[in-house]
Length: 85
Image 1: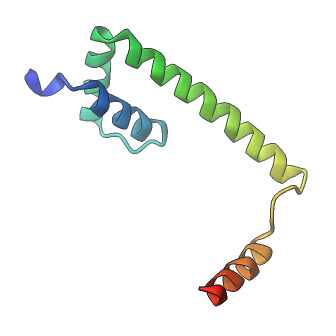
Image 2 (image 1 turned 90 degrees about the vertical axis):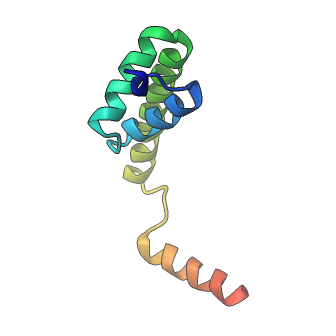
């Protein structure tokens, strides 16, 4: 049972992994146990998810409005940076 008790630092790392669907089943179980004990980490997780959702929606909107660089422009820029190095 002690393997389910993790520190707040470990919890935030697993929260980030979970947000991008990279957390294992065991990681998710550890989160649930930690959230029962630590309300601060539970709040962090909610806020982190909320901010990522807002940013994700904003980024999608910018690309729909053609305010982001095309892949071709990105490649050209990358080549110029490599030339300068």
